[in-house]
Length: 122
Picture (cartoon, rainbow, N blue to C red):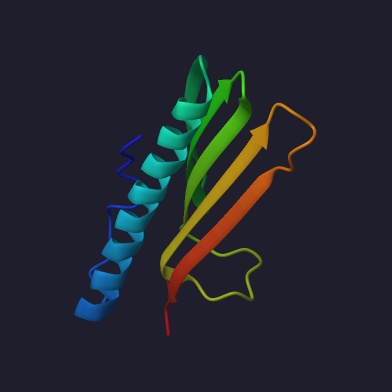
């Protein structure tokens, strides 16, 4: 997908925070590539959908691949701009990735991975 959703950083980040934020973005790129390359090797045919959603508090990019062996594989990137509920501090940087893999056969379980990376305002 090569999403640029994770490539924007606020000026308030320290050099170390900026480095860690960029590493998270690189990690998300690498994981997305690995997941969809593995799915392509398993499926003999597949189709891909990519959707972008923007709301006041969040932005999402969702990529879903559907195939004959891996029935559905999804990768979601989320940028949280404003925390909900209000008692959570607003983030400087808040990046979230989620991976879900559903095989066609009911004999194999599904996989769900969620990872969050955040720096909050003090």
